[in-house]
Length: 204
Image (cartoon, rainbow, N blue to C red):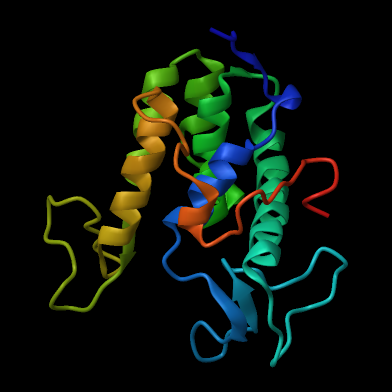
């Protein structure tokens, strides 16, 4: 088994990126507004292209381009994550799990959590388990979590979101090595057979 390596030597793996792509049910190839008042978005949540241009009305991307945009965004979130994790040794699967979650909830949220502290203390399993805490989303008065239940807050109306819970369970299993990030075929993601990419040239 490859030993844990300092986080600075790692980046999100191609397998994790394909896993993220395959798991997203809301990848849109045409620009859209997620919610009223939001900015134009495309693919798996991209709002700005790698060259700095904002996504605009009428933009369209291919599935291959959507994957490249996802890779660029994920790499950026991973770099932000590295700043708070530091040089803690990690397995690739652990970094992939945290990077995937950071792409969803933001690196700042992961950095504010107890995950960096647990990792620095060598409490790897506890850090992985903390992934499961990030499952709360907005609720109505009727659906908000009851006192004592997960996600209950006296100040905010929150509930456990099934989609978030599924994503966190998947990332937890990656983190613990119970499953691999991706073992399927590219064809099953909608990408063409033989499609190739590389960290050096594919994300930019």
